[in-house]
Image 1: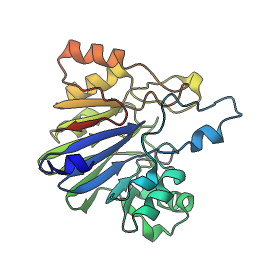
Image 2: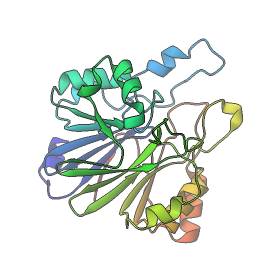
Image 3: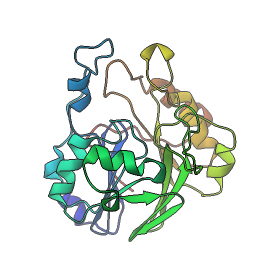
Length: 262
């Protein structure tokens, strides 16, 4: 991270595993949906759904003492993890924590903070140099609260000259392509672990669907995520790669902990 600061005019992206990413731009740092603990492995150790890790965590959250903003796209623990976010907030007292407005009370309770400590998003939140625009995510359905606010969201993040789409956990839904196409997205971060009801958890885009979605919305570069974390809920990126090549969609497959300068 310190080395990347020497080239602060560029945007730098690290994959932290699952749907977690670190973004650095002009000395500011944003974390997207970090899961940097073993809380799920411990929670499900003696159940019929053991969360056996395939990869070690990239870094301990308390070591990330330079973060300005962190996001949570929805309330599943691998996207809203107290064992990640509580030490992260302790290491960064001024940290802004963005959550869907529909999840504000739930998130505050899980993190043992007042709702006022969190930053709810419905449409747009501006935290310079980042602008966050919430879009619906279907995990597996488009679920809303009584006020119509979506419980699962993706974020279009505008920073510098870039537009980055972090979908959160989602399947395809009616109107999704038209909604996203208008943003002229530069980089899309999309899950590829697919959907298998036998897993007993909500599903995501498959590799083929992620590559095709990126192509249809005009993404310049697509990066796959949400795989190689838990043995029971993963998939190979091979189908994603094969599809992206076949349809001429530019892609990059990252290793966990790897930096991608843009």
